[in-house]
Amino acid sequence: MSHRIVLATLNARYMHASLGLRYLLANMQRHGGQAVADCAVLREFTIQTPPGDIAAALIAECGPAIPGDVHVIGLGIYIWNVEQSHALVQSLRTQRPDIRIVLGGPEVSHEPDTQPIVALADHVITGWGDVSFPKLCKALLFGPRPLMKTIAGEQPPLDEITLPYTHYSETDLAQRVLYVEASRGCPFKCAFCLSALDKTAWAFELEAFLAALDDLYARGARTFKFVDRTFNLKIDASVRILEFFLNKLAQQPDAPLFVHFELIPDQLPARLQDCIARFPAGVLQFEIGIQSLNPQVQSGISRRQDSARTAANVRWLVQHSQAHLHTDLIFGLPGESWASFASGFDELWSWGPHEIQLGILKRLRGTPLAQQDLADDPLTRGMVYNHAPPYMVLQTDAVSAGEVQAFARLARYWDLVANSGRFGRSLPLLLQGPSAFAAFADFAAWLWNETASTAGLTPERLTDALFDYLCGPSKLDPATVRAALLADYLASGARAKPHCLRDVLPRTIATTARASQVAARQRLHRGTAPVATLET
Image (cartoon, rainbow, N blue to C red; front, side):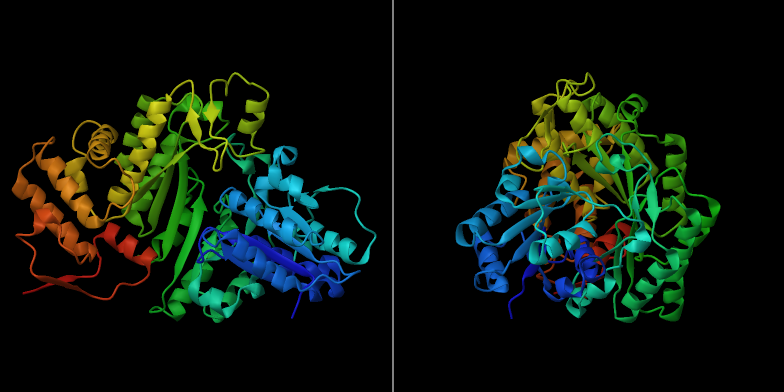
């Protein structure tokens, strides 16, 4: 069966389900009419699929070109898929120039006149598409035909947007991360973030949202990732949502459940703490954007953050809750030097978060930082970015190109060694000294010199590298190092044999069955990974 409207995007991975496309599909009838809704279908692909194969699939969905019929392909464009999407649009244009191509999403919502992919499209919707895309489809199919190529997305009150969650399929529920949102927007003005363009945050009607969550749970959903930028902005709503999940745990204490939220780091009142403390291990995951702990850097990027309260809240979460904490730092912010970043990292590390996500500043189109860059503002002068996605900074007035390259390698190694949770007993040996960041930077420089690679580093190869470094340049006692690495290796559930452990590992290693990747990673950080048994 062919369809006259195909909604599509290229996800980074199969496990990611597009929330944006489901919003568009859910609102086709309300804002485009039944005839438009009846024409529409949703199709998702991944960036690993060749663009030519995706083009063939989309053309098959549209069916043959029929004089007088209009076919529309709407594509969601993001920083992670714009290059592959450009190749896809080129292929579509070559094979089926009659198909109307409509682009939307954050990557094409700003500076559209400079983008090759926009030049190939018939229309681009900037900003919100929930209402504007169905209206555009109605006009394209039934007239009157729109005259403008670029259409500013209409932002309606949230009660005029139909919630999309019924469009998660049974396969989605069983195999994919489900994205949900209790609110949109953000009241903060961080210069590197697109959410800085929002004047405030808007909340969906809470009862309707909770009813949608209840329906998802009843259908079998157990993994929920909230995309709200400020989940704990309105404490009453935050508590209600947490209590919803606590009630589900009380009803089905043995059922798996995983819920991810992004928290404002300096706002954690007692009511919210009380709720959080009631969750068992493995259920809650919090992403906490720290970004920088340098007050001058924070001021320069318009980031309002009480660092003392942030420290107290993170420490409380570590000590009094069983939530898994992802904290974020960004390297390359205006005015942030290597030494300044190192100081902030060491401070954050002392708070005890389970993971520190190390990112490099990106020039996101439309952000205040990008606008200042176009205006040659003194704040951004000297900042050089890669012209290819994801537009990472290459150097600034405060950090050299060599330092950015060294940091990129360090960040990759940090994720493999520290954030993976595989080396919980060995990591303290590695990070000894007055500065944890400096200690790891020394290891990263050594590892790069030894391997000239940040890819293909298996747990076994990393185990041997850690042994060689700790016993070599760090001059630690080999027996102490081997004991820590052995405990880590057995707890990780790995099955091969690192060279440094060949004399202490048995011939075979049997492990209990592993659960989901997310849960397994959390258990490694908590020291409760599946038990490894030794078989001789």
